Figure (cartoon, rainbow, N blue to C red):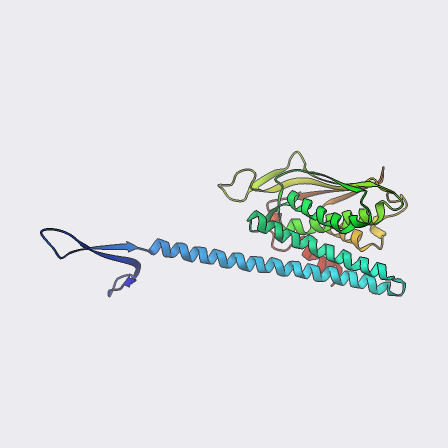
Length: 295
């Protein structure tokens, strides 16, 4: 309740009245007045923070749905340009590729939820889940392909960095499954993620421990296989493959460097830098894909 008098400021208070057993005054009462001003302010602040968080979550989901829409448009455009030569198996493969791209983005939200964070996730843990999902999808046709992962622990990225990197890993691993082991009985796919020596991290909260931080600095992501390799006379930037076109586009938008090695198979290495500013950006690099590739 609140009390108001002319010329006075209204304050939120809580009144508690109880009787007292006093010999000299049998009708004594105890009145306790508790000022609830700070409690009210705290509730309002928490409500405001919760509203902002919900709006941000909806904003990011909307962004990701727009990215998915863009990817589907690109896939549809590619199918349309080759529709006279398409087989049923190629159409099914196109749907599977689109499905895996959507799953790669959905897994990010799942990892955020599991980690209890707002917009930063343990990227190494995410890559493990993504790779396992791809193996369940593709390994049915080749049980002799194995997976090796060397992922540095406690690497935290926000969604603006994680979404394009997730799509890149999805495309490269899928490409290895589809093309690297043709005519071979077995093979190995390797994923490696490490900080460079000058890598650092920024605490998400002042009271956070070192393992609860946003990773900053230089990183190297490598996806490789020991398959048949890509011939020297083929330029990956001129390939019709939508997957590799996405890889080169997203690496450029992350201001990264893409290196292809063709010795004893195929190895894609991506050097990229994550800064504190990048982790505060509002428009993900993958969102720029919509502008660059569709509009």
